[in-house]
Length: 322
Image (cartoon, rainbow, N blue to C red; front, side, top):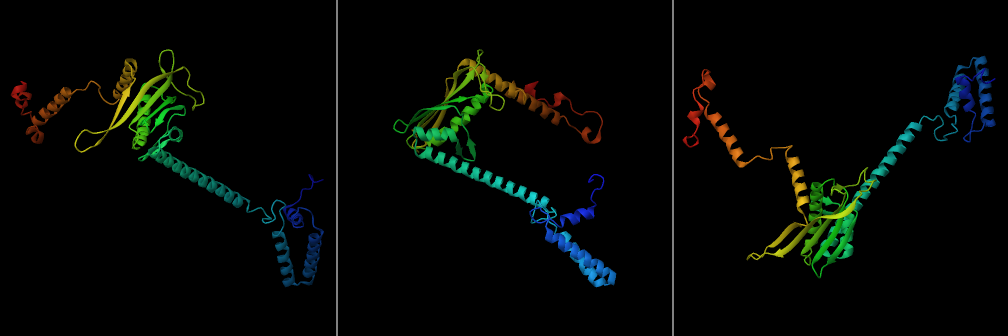
């Protein structure tokens, strides 16, 4: 029967006006509505327009106060969108607060790592620095996850670590990343008055052809092959022999064989060739400058008045070049 005789909008409104906060039909509300309807009929019969207007206003107010079973505070459900928007904004604000808090926490940890390493060098402080990274100057340096602290002794004045680089894709990248990491570790460690030598060993996985292997698919697939020592960075600190007693810092790269050096040189040249001619020499630069100068000196009155060229290359070429 409901399919053949669907409720009209007015009947739906009347139906929900008789439902209480729990979603159950309230006999009291239904009785009050029937009394209002009879009073409206009586007022209309008497022709009492003022009473009819008042009862009509009460009827509309009762409809406006109809209860939505989903929300007691918002019977019509008109504020659902606003509520969802406010909730979303609150969630975003909470996430932003958490992110800012985490960044502040990471910053504090980084500074503590740097301070601990420069003030106290032990196996624990060096391990903490390698694990959490080091902040120095305006930058931050992260180290490979696979590392070993071989030595960290203030009595011997030496810090030596070994890391396994699995992110670099070539010898050139390994050299660049390793040099930055070694400089960060050495800068912080050598600020300790008791440390004068930092050794940073870089290992990598290589295949049968000695090609550098690296992690793939966002680090999910680890590098394969056998582990091999590739480079070693040695930083030293010493007092200068001059009268002003300066402190000298030196960095040496050792353990680089001819094959690795040749590969790095080839990779550097391949990159440089994209920018400029790697065979460019001072002689070639001087020749190009002399050619530009001769072209400038050959300019005569024809530049302003037109006509034939008034100077020849022999007129502007120095006698020593002829």
